[in-house]
Image 1 (cartoon, rainbow, N blue to C red):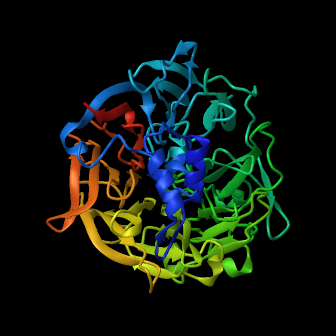
Image 2 (image 1 turned 120 degrees about the horizontal axis):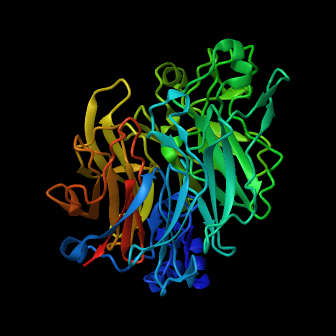
Length: 551
């Protein structure tokens, strides 16, 4: 979540829109709050996963084209697959004064956590928490090491950073959840609890969480006084069928009390079929690293990937929710609602994971309905009512192949706007240009229409789509994107205005060469999110943090 003053936080909470526009009192207060130092404490800025920092006022559509560029870089010890987090207002970190500077927190696949002075680039503190696992199960869909693979979350009132490490202990992989003091990076609870779980399957047998086969890639969620994490698999690998009941990979959603790290009693499992059904179910929760989201009623939303089971399309029977948006309560007592696309059998058979992307929940209502979006490998973007998923989509648009997450902001000309990204190499489909596409909500008619504004970001060599964020408000909004690497392994940071030049979004900036970093391990996608806070933009990549801003 973005954390600013109480008054400004209230404005953000009250920011709602209708078909006619946003509530004016909240909008004016948001504008008054622009420039207030803010902290980015969670993935995509908030638990709706909007990706929008509407408080940013330093970076504008006027000064980014002329005065913006790379300010400094910081060397790190391994690849970064997580989003940077930013805390403003800390006085000391690691016993060193911050001089009032922002502090950026980075986690690496070497199981290392860094606290970095955002103004000077100095490393204020670091903690190597575990020995990472090398190529788990031989999976090459990552770098050589898998350590901290999912973005953590910061609870600023208690000055706590929650992260999950994956490490080797006595020759075996182990997951631990850590509650770190953000001023020292030391564990508040020691030893950090080992993650374990069991679940009763539909045939009455017990399925046990096995860290050798489960992958924690999804960003953590803080809500309702708890921390939540989701798990998928490594390269969809399972053990031989004769051991399937013991070692197969299945998706999990687990939770812990954020004060004690005592694990919650529930353990939501998307696939609860017994091993007699050939035992090769997956239904993993991976979402290309996107975060678990909350709906308007504070339930938890996730998108589930494919399954290897022969009877994958049985979500109505309540045992296997592959290729679905699922809703679970914060108690994790079970799946309470879901949306499954009508072509689920094709998605499963063709490895066209709907779960390659995350969920975006818009922070308000269109007319009388809340709205969420989700898209996956087959290129369909679904517009859903998060309070009534099972009623089916409100609208469906062809948005392009998506290993990505949509972003939301309030456009100065068009009102509530959704940003999608797509492109690259589609699963079993021809390649397509990498594009950013804007969609707007009209005053009447279908809940989502194609605005027709887009930008071509061709040059990526990885899977379709990439991650965006938005800074600023109304006509001052800037769309930021980090594309996946080209043939030279270079990442590129782009900035766009929502205005149109020669039929496309107006490009304000593109980073030169390797300024934004490199990505040599192209077997695993660069699911990197540009983070904008207090006039600076952060891009973390392979052994590298790049900090951009005004010169």
